Length: 176
Image (cartoon, rainbow, N blue to C red; front, side, top):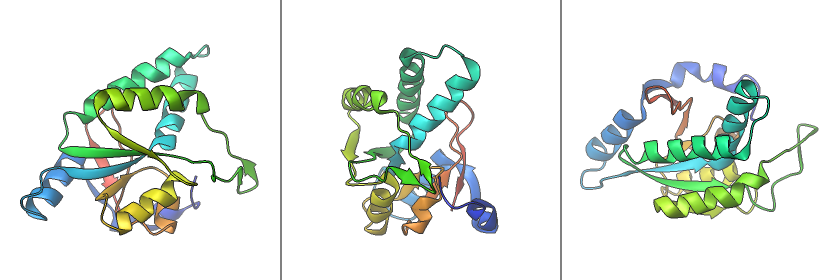
């Protein structure tokens, strides 16, 4: 998931803030008249975080635990001045990265899309890797920032990446 050591190398350029403050500052001060911060979300990273969270806590992790946690995350987004766009890895995603097989949580995709539809959130399937699609959308100004912990988004040319978003804690993030 990204280039080893890149986040540490970029540490001097990061800004520690809350997602809410970042969205308010960039939208209200940066672009008067526009209301919501357009946030592109790398859905596969959320899947990975959910899997790590529940494998660590529950040996007999079930689908319902991950989906309940996802539901909590989606509800938490409603409290923020953001308009999320969720991007899923698509069929052109490589099967191997850095000589390792890429493993996805395909069982969550359909259920996640149903939840996103229920919340009224926009989503799309990338042609390949979600990070590449999100970087392109960020370059074009379609999304203001990308929410991911994968530094590949920067390699693909993203301009603003938000990482370390913790749903259960305060909304402190690192923006690059």
